[in-house]
Image 1 (cartoon, rainbow, N blue to C red):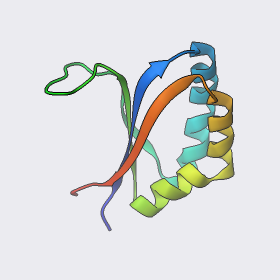
Image 2: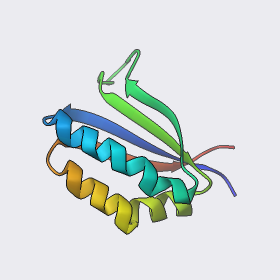
Image 3: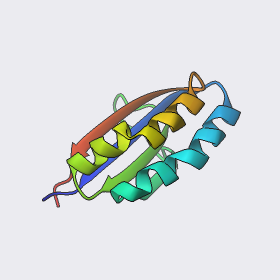
Length: 97
């Protein structure tokens, strides 16, 4: 079964304190689903229509595990804490390997 990548693009952050609170809760919520953070930070370089946004890339054992992590009660609580503190785009894609 291929791994999955959960990729989050932060288009804007209006409340860094809410983001900080979310960042403390999210890893604990997703770890039981096999999450492993691969990258976290502002894009080092952008091309074409790219934006120099904050990006977080998390690996999961499968798409099913990634979706289950997103939908679990603990992660949903982390999202409530984040609230309107950021505008994000969340994508889950199947990895090639």
